[in-house]
Image: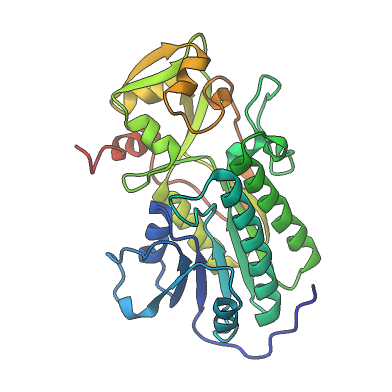
Length: 311
């Protein structure tokens, strides 16, 4: 996969944002001021942009027509905002295969049009919390979720490692992988936000792991910083602190409901209960030193914002 050199210099940074299926993507659409093409399964909600005509929505399809159209646009940057669900009826296994195929098409597109920058928003929980996890994990630590039985988690780890390989193979493209810790926000409908919005929050009996969370606005700020600095590499995006799970639940306005692990799984918990039993703490030192990133929202502000729209 060889990439042609880019000859023209353009004043505006034209961005392709992939994955407008969650609140984080909508926040990116409304906080980025550059012209955007949005490739997703939902039309973005435009609430904060001054020039809404700069946002062009395209339904995500693995079709030759869509990618031929994208090749003509000559993007400067591609932002992949994480795992996509092609439709609400798609099962996890088919969605995982779809995401891996889509990523490979996007990396090929990045080479074909000669983009200057490729950003993947991954996740820190792909390291896989377990009884063997100890200390502060760095960006060089292994992603143990690559072997996870949950096909969504294993495909996300596969996507992360694929972009890592792309980073070293194509040094002319500023490739960046951001791995945020559990991301919370009033507009987010991810598992962790929904979990902490519950009034009676299931926990695993006998366990109280240390947890890291970060506000969605801090993740968006990190993306904007990477766009501005074009810094290559892998970076953890963390909040200002960490706390035991029980304390997080209480601070968010909920009450812990301890129960055996098998009962937690029956409540509809979408992933492994390992994250409710074991810590998986990551270091944010690299992002602080190389990106100048520091969270602006503290843990209490982040947790209280969860119920801002539902109260």
